[in-house]
Image 1: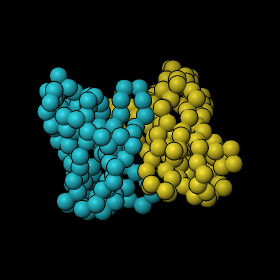
Image 2: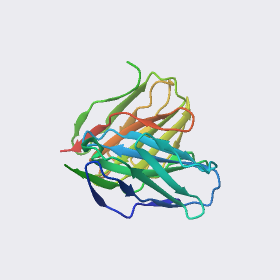
Image 3: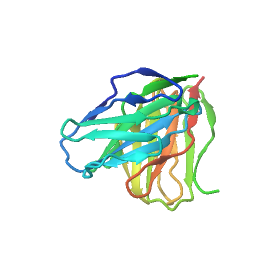
Image 4: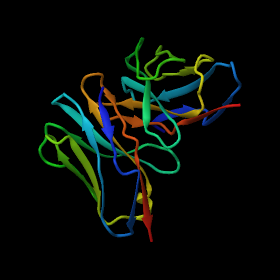
Length: 114
Length: 110
């Protein structure tokens, strides 16, 4: 079974600064997708960014970018110019082709200080 | 409005009762999913359906049942066999390779 590890249960960042959330996963597949989701206090799951494993270029969405290291099975999320609205629980979730389902990590709580 | 609609937002169940959570989508997406989230934890897959009249068990299907009679609808029934049903339930759909979620339903056993 695939496993996903988010080793930082909680992180804090000062407003306008940069923070990186880590994620490692285990898989024997070579072709898959990886996602970061944000869950604010409303509990809605919001897609932040996605990465295709076959692409070497790291995905970027505005202030959010990833560092995808396929060989190391690592998929970290960098948030630049942090804003108060970024405060939430963040989940790393690979989606393997086999089974066609997301596997979630335990999440990292991000606190943003003003 | 287009999107994924889950109802009710809050639901209370007495011991021994079955309850059904509704998930409707007007996005014309084939694949639909049900996830469960316990406090402070990630999501776990209960059931998923790739097409109408077909569905597969996820990692924690025991005590749950689903149906997929229409493309738009994927209701989840929490049966009395589910011993610890208090949780937050999320429905999702998948166009292409990305999964999008509804707003979720809270189920509490009283």
